[in-house]
Amino acid sequence: MGFPGVPRAATAAATLALLAACAGPGPSGPAEDPACAPYAAYHGQAGSTITVSSSIRGVEADKLVQAWAGFETCTGITIDYTGRADFEKSLPVEVAAGHVPDVALFPQPGLLALVARAGRLQPAPAAVADNVRRYFPADWQRYGTVDGELYGTPIDGNVKSLVWYSPKFFAAHGWTVPQTWAELIGLSDRIAGTGTKPWCAGIESGGSTGWPVTDWLEDVLLRTAGPAVYDEWVEHRIPFDDPRVVAALDRVGGILRNPRYVNGGLGGVASIATTAYQEAGLPILTHDCALHHQASFYTSFWPANADIAPDGDLYAFYLPPVDPAAGRPVLGAGVFAAAFTDRPEVQAFSLYLTTPDFADSRARTSGIVSSNKGLDRDVLTTPIGKLSAALLADPEAAFRFDGSDQMPAAVGAGTFWSGMTDWIRGADTATVLHRIETTWPA
Image (tube, rainbow, N blue to C red; front, side, top):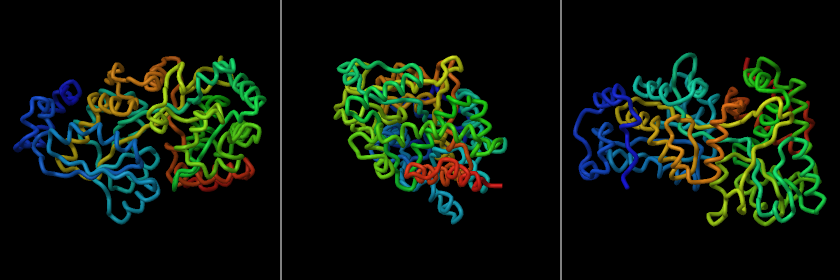
């Protein structure tokens, strides 16, 4: 079994352009291995090092590094990766000081736009831009474009409109997966009636504490006000504290600030603010709670021996709509690679990240879904990966990118996060949302 390759991923023009950029002798040793033949287009920069930084840490960082291991081995280019808990807050400071990595992986288009407008990011080379246009939907291209220039190339995608649960636990109690919001609340009441807290949640995430509540608000706003209003809110064409947003957050509060509903196995409502999001769903395995709203990437935080399957210890269902007749909104997010330098080895790595081969490798190593249209779905071996791919490909679904990730970084990765933390601690809904509105950049 060889490493994933380049030929089906790169256009002929892209390959020729890259060969010209990377002229020179290829790496010795690994390059002579037939398994490395697909990486011939990237040769010529052996012995060089590329620094990469992002917010991806822990086990998921290990899987990310595995996804480009073939590129490293066969090209002789070392990828020096650093995952940081304070990435979103520290990167703008480092950009201002001139201390930047070669490549950053941005989880927020809003932060990417901030850095691009500071004049430090390199526009995507022609070969990279060609691949992005070939393999990614128009919306995903738009999220990486700033003032008409492509800077960020999508490499990961995920679905956030999911609720994790235990099919075995449900079956033992005769519970069924809800199809509407009313059924979801009815189910929560039935679970609470058994003495089990239906929901568990946690929002602690270091310098990013609070972001899980932003996902809740965005998911609910999509379901109550619709995608068009959601877009207006994200783009600040309506105030952050529009009455429809206030109503959506109050609906979220009916779950997260309801002492009958939370926080199973972890404490009361107040414990949500101090519970690490990575650990917040674990009480499902001990049946101390039954439901946990979290994205498809949460697969990485369950124990390795957990049976994740439609009839297993764990699985997930689509967060149901308030009004099924209004459509099926799907909230998601992703990661965008953008370069601060334009050295040949950086351009080679950037091109590789746009290919279906990297998307396939990422899926194999971590089960993470990409919005890359060339992704081979057969390599998705996890049930959640397949579920996520189906939701992203559903022609009837109205997909929207995470709102906080698109907003100006001062809000989306700043006052929105801190405001939701204050809200979970008991602050008034309208007051918190108005305070965030006042921080939107002029």
